[in-house]
Image (cartoon, rainbow, N blue to C red; front, side):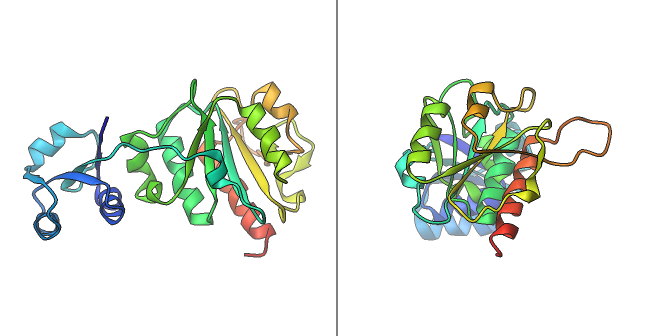
Length: 230
């Protein structure tokens, strides 16, 4: 099945990646690209695009090849690896935001479960704002088995939990590392938490007891970068 994406950043990156099957737009810039590159297109006015997509299309949408997940082996590195594992994340906007941050910090990839978890969708692509073209997402059947495999490949596993005694800044991240982000409502599951080499907390000084999943991911990923001196 092919997907419809929208918004200039998402469409621009899909064009760079040669993944556009058809363009829908009233913008002369994209009409000219379609004619020059030989991409099938339909002139669609604002009202048509408003009906076609849910969100700010910025005058352009595109049908693209459906996203194909990567294999786990494609995101494993020997040195300074950085992988994000999502444990039961459900909100596509959170996944999109995490993908965007993952690209910004140069992460090697994102892992999530095939079932009972959010997957790449047009909404994810829109929120990722083009970063989906550069971040490798891998679907796995079992997170615990995957973590055991990653440990065999030299990765250390770091999870977050509000009850942890270690602050997230107390860890040195100069090793192959997997950062685990839990679900929006339940956090990291018990079995996955048992596989963590380090469990850390982020200070919560207000009245709520947790950070948004994508915000927590951003804090952790930039701490990895800071710790590595980049």
